[in-house]
Length: 539
Image (spheres, rainbow, N blue to C red):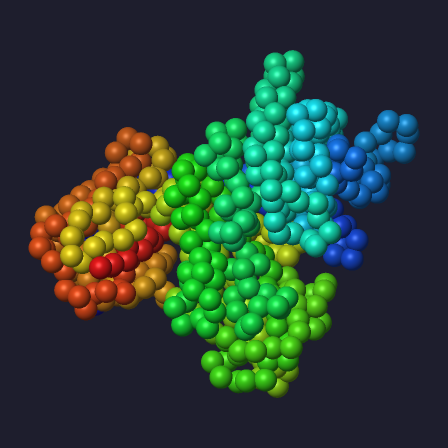
């Protein structure tokens, strides 16, 4: 193709060898205590090298204090190397200590509450005295069991959660006061232990629930917020089949506008950013499982947006829920199952007409796109539920590749106005280990899959006239800084300048420009791409 000679010539003048550099981006995985039973998934099975943090799920809240969730799983189960003498440490908590000794970079948090054990939060944070008691019990629990902090999973203050949960209108303010109290007590304990304690929360994607958090007040006392950007559609009363964790909303989905427009991963992230939460304190939540609908009578659109009768059965461990490992091994290539990709929501689904089953889920491609999205917006990292659903670390490996091994690309804006065109500044961040490497930033209109093979790797842009034009015009007034060398910090500042055109043609409305930077290597060495970013045209 016409671009190839240009790229080959450019590779010859590249001046630095490939050097991988891990970024500080965080990857947080939940470990469920009940995984040791039927799932037969244990702490030693965790691929710790690909994680930065483990959230152990869950501790319970009883009588205003935190308590063990499962005594046997947490502190009593025997593993090789444990002993039975009085005072010996056993169970999953002990295995976490062993794991941290093997992987010193790893930090662990005790997650408190969750969907099942959120009934008593409201009482525990009701008064100044109860908040002090609850907070102190958490600090003591964290130290006793040698965690590095606490992750509060209250589902949810004010409204939502299980029908039997205690909720009050004043939960909103009381939750803020409690988190401030807990942070203060962690800080006080740190004066004697010398430890740095982490305090995080799991928080909803539903905008109605987000409104029940005083985000400007709690963000300063939290290390980060894990957005539970999944379970956005499911077989629990939603009117139609749909996606568990769509990256973007679909304007054709036959649901209420607030659901269509707001109940998706990107909208949830933007709602937290709009509320003033710093991007580095946000984690995009990913699902390592799918949601299944059964009794789908209509074969139209391969079962998408159709009526159903119940959760599909059987799931991996319960009706309507499928681990990714199970889906990859037993459904994706099985007879009767059709896999389809949604071009707007950026997730796949599986459909079996004979069985009348629809499953919306995430695969490596959709997880990669979620990783790209969080990189574009400069988020602090990713969280996922949960480790046993991805036994071969396929999805986790995808997160690790894009978030901690590859250089990243960010944009000053995610949209460009057709009526008032602007310059979009980009930032390549590769780290000092990539300093001096040659870079070429390219732009395309036709999406990011299947991608363009280059130097033994894959540039996640599809070849079109804009890719070729941006290569030929690299460094020009339209594409300033798009060719050059990374500086001493492994950074570069390419841009796409739309201001040279007074008004962009209306035909572009609804389209996007995709950008990606290719870092070249000398000789036969492979180059590597950054994440691609998307810049949408708006009125």
